[in-house]
Image 1 (tube, rainbow, N blue to C red):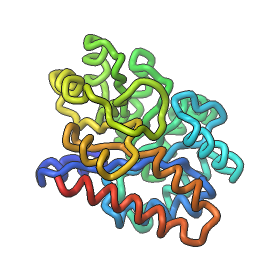
Image 2 (image 1 turned 90 degrees about the horizontal axis):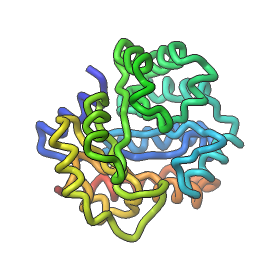
Image 3 (image 1 turned 180 degrees about the vertical axis):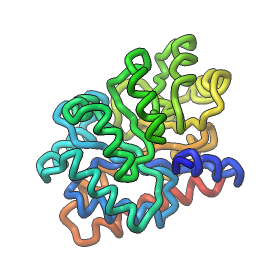
Amino acid sequence: MNRIVAKFAQLKSAGKKGLVVYIGAGDPHLAATRDLALAFDQAGVAVLELGAPFSDPLADGLVNQLAAQRGLESGTTPPKLLATIADIRKQSQIPIVLYIYFNLIHKVGLEKFIADCAQAGVDGLLVLDVPPEESDNYEALMKKAGICHIYLVAPTTPEARMEKIVKRGSGFIYYISREGVTGMQSSVASNLSSQLAKLRAHTDLPIAIGFGISNPDQAKAVAQEGDACVVGSAIVNQIAAHGQSPELVAKVGAFVKSLADAVKTL
């Protein structure tokens, strides 16, 4: 069974919620990405999203844009990232999603890229700029490889289109809790309950809620509404602050554990 599917099934059977963590791959370097992944597994993270560095990350706010820039500067490429994931797999079975823009896939070739992902131990792809209407071949190849194709739903998505999107997704649905790009916010969106009710009317897939979640209290509040919460920029900000410190993994790992513990107390 796919690791994402298995993890959410395990959480559901235990009556628990999950923490999904996003970091920019190769920030500050791929050795740190590997060590952070292992630390997050120990901290109780349900799913790890690794952002493949890209020169034009249009869905991302400043914090994650700078992480992508640092990843590019460290020499991180998709093949090197997949090699790092294969290295993580020697010690950890944490579910891993690649958060990626289609140009990077297109350069390699869709079929080859998906096959390479499967071989490396990737469990899901979240391709930011591929709409479901253009995904027939992509979805078929992903299903054949046993990898989840994860789609985004925004608060501005009309319900008719929302229904079409969620019926095509797999693994989980990533619900963007607020309009705009990624980034830390001082409060969580006020309309989560009503939006999630619309989603749940059309899918049984787990719903992970992201964009703007910055601290344990917010993570706990959001996890109460969905099946998982996604925290990215707040963690990437910690990596930026401690990137050159020998205590990088320990400090970031402790922050992530505080988030995971908050979600687990539900």
